[in-house]
Length: 153
Length: 119
Image (cartoon, rainbow over all chains, first blue to last red; front, side, top):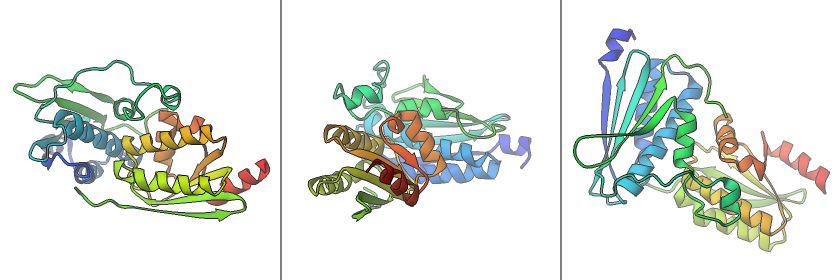
């Protein structure tokens, strides 16, 4: 697949806000990334990060309201694969500071949940919320197409 | 809601309580995993092995369930190990800190042999 041809390629998916549907998006985008030649280790990273971004959109953005949709847009740029996860913003993203460490969680100092953004930040080459026109949150993930091997840990 | 795709079973081998986990570890897994852990704990298990098999999907909600298990293991003065994870999920376990609380082994045999040295 040439760079000029792949630069025009994109995928758009629309999911109901129900847990489990993130796996449908994961499998579709992973197949796309595989065709683009992303390294297998990076595809595993992408799968986990994308699921976490979709779960955040389903649970926190759309508050698990199945009639609301989560959009997943994936486009190919010259050097990177960019994925945007958009919700309908019933609940706008509000940063809550640093997530609790596992030591704090095991000590009972807070919720056992809340590892999603930590995982995303460590698995992607770029990740974060971006502004968008209209209601809703947009979370962008990007992976370098030439990256070799997995994320560091 | 999409179908829950996890099967959990328990067995004992050489003094180790093994909890076999076939399938996805997500929010839908909570009751099954916690019930299996309670079952082996009520039977007096000191050594617990979470044996992951055919796990294509472990997400942050699943990790939260496992953090709950390590909390209970610590409270009950048990030893916990995990086996059968893919390289990717071994990396994920290290990223979130679960490896501080549970030794990670490639497979069940390796985990059992290491547990035996502790008995």
